[in-house]
Length: 231
Image 1 (spheres, helix red, strand yellow):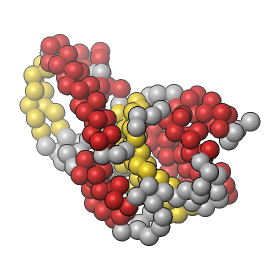
Image 2 (cartoon, one colour):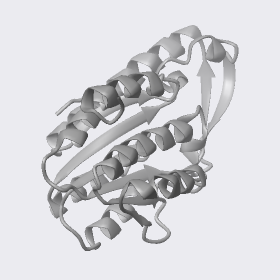
Image 3 (cartoon, rainbow, N blue to C red):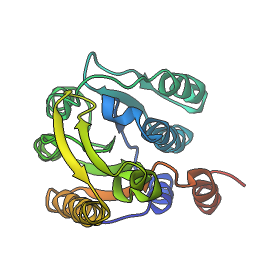
């Protein structure tokens, strides 16, 4: 149940049956940092493009949830999907569990549900475990900024006593930053990301991890040619 995004795209394009594709994109405040929302847009655009080329219907949902998302059908709907994705802005708290509940109440066949998020919310697992209830397949594309896993030189310039501020809740935590605490953080961050992957697997979801600065276009062009989307 672990996957690479390029392999996922090939399998999506080669699927024999009609497929309802639901894209859930995290637009909470934490996605505004490190290029994560931009990468999430690219991921959703790639998956939506492949589905629409296959003439599979695509619906786009954001969380925090504010209203039912638009639905797109056919290759001619690609520009409209891209326009909707370009208009997404980051802000507010995640609200993933609420979005999952709203999605469960939407009509339609099981299909494929794709969650694109940094999962930086305590409730992410609650939301994820609700999604398989509508049937079909669930894929989590976990988008993280590179410095969230590996702070590196940028963080080393900030050694000393600091206040860390939660981008969504405004909560503050006082920390004393040193080379040792940075190393401890990297180990903890990697352990957390690996644990997230394991929990997704146990919930029945495929898991793909991407960094915000991964060269997605290069990877996807090869995948699209393999699948026959591009020639």
